[in-house]
Image 1: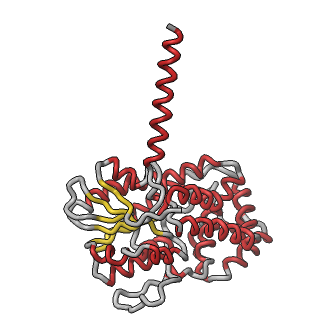
Image 2 (image 1 turned 120 degrees about the horizontal axis):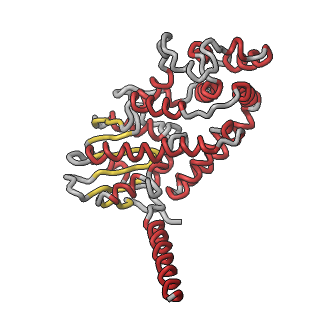
Image 3 (image 1 turned 90 degrees about the horizontal axis):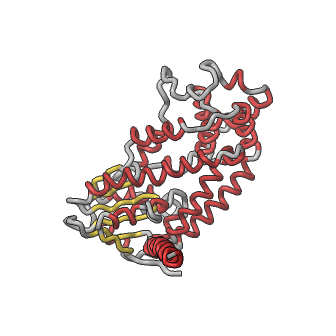
Length: 345
């Protein structure tokens, strides 16, 4: 009897392990452009993984059918219209709003009474590089939030801020353009309807929700980390570029299985203060909200959008792979999702 019971348990464990193995084997590994058909949709739609940094444009050279597929669709679907994304990042908050004051220990806490004279001088040296950074003081951002804003603005007002008008013939020199920007330019060029998966309001709500989960910590620690980051910008920036270059290499190889893993390394670097304070839990929550929960939310929109229209859906490549990725979720809903041009090592 005991032997029979042992055999049954062993067999059940084998089935469980084998199921997990097969599930992992069926998950997508390579490919950035995927064709969506079946499940009653009228015409094929396409799912494409983008790269939110410079360098991603080169991948188009390895996807020969890209242009013909793009112009064959009626509607362009993106995470957010990038003009709205820039507005969201640069929009001045209502001076009466106290949303950015909530994290402070007291309602009247400011950089003036929180920083030492030396720290104020260091912060001023960073702010004075760009007058627009004075908005940090106007918003009275929490130190970790201010640091993120400094990083964003310090990228020489990155080219993402430069959007040619619909009629501007800017399409000849595109290799240095961020891929997401280029795709929206092309959508405008071909008079495609553009739909967002995240509206400004929805993304702001998500961002506020993430910020509300920032762990309670010493504001002294936050300030010290902010000052450390300003003083060691070159070293930190060099490491950031190293991580991004690794991510770009995987992207150009169309290795969506490993892109997600490398993206986590980038996220952990961007959350150095959380790692420094030993708070890995916040990083995991942030990753879940930015990837998994957005995927779940987007799926509701995507399935409605592709019913009657041929759509070209462009999202960060990190949203494609994995069990909770868009490809696997579409397949679980009985759509056929097949790589258009599969890259092999």
